[in-house]
Length: 429
Image (tube, rainbow, N blue to C red; front, side, top):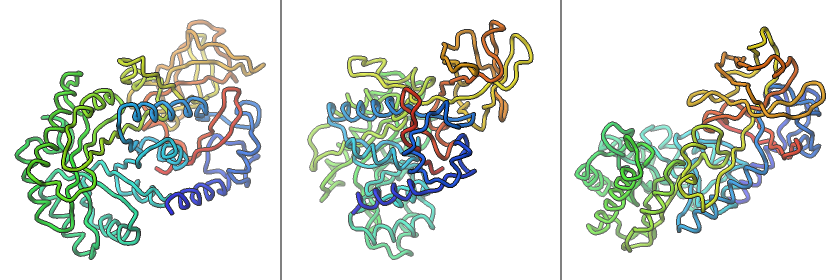
């Protein structure tokens, strides 16, 4: 059933008409369906695409999907990649095909998108206290016995709000919850002390609208993170699961969930989760990394665990934003037609990687070319030599931070190395 809904949803995406909503696409594609346009296998550089245009490398995406599947299988981890990175159902489908247990969400809107496309296992890495969202969730759980939903709790007030809303909604199934252990003082969400965790577990046991199924957290928020500090926090998380189980708080479960894992420390998660002892039920060791699917040329290229464990493989950056030189006012300065509306800039500025000649289409490295700033619709570029760039050249930019790259584009070409566009990824932000 879930597979049929996903297939139907993807077919509907392919049937969507291309129009002015989707920037960068060829103007003469207006009125075609996305599927029809994909079948034409146009070339990104020669067949009418306008700049700026964001492209995803088909080869790099395929490589990254396969690598994390292999990695999680090797280390005995279940995988619920964080869908907020891309919000692209076509990529969710491929992640599930590569063995993902489910998809992680951050907010109720994302859960609704996932359900629209038939995702039947969703991990909400947040406390859910919105009464309207809880009413919707109660109805969704009642309508589909196969739907598995899990979310955080980290406060007594949150438990109270959830219980009240679910009771008023006439919920017929309890909502599965995990106690979120905070990553330390000054970190983000989550319970700070073991005593508070026990207090929450007692409160959950006192209502019939919630069911405690495990513990979770996010090691990426450990203050002043080092391998030692991250490992110590992960061991606290495992110890909490062991304590809950020893006191009978996981009675009658078919699976106990222990979950962590962003994109910077999944090697530490794998190492510590390998130490989880036998509990009263099998343990679902759930990793939630999301940025891996596209990786990047900035933040994640620097912090990826594969730098520490190169023998396990390497992720490949998949993004390239193509922009065009529209002004060359001095020998030392140029301006591209891509800016803050097109490129992620919250962590690092884009990096010039390659230049495609506007005269003959030849490629050359972007040596001596540096993006120094972004306006809304312009990139400020410094050049070392007058001949480095001329008006009309295309510049391929590497980006930092996938989560703020995907959200600027509603339809993203998936491009093979020779420039052939094989598909278009629809995002829902």
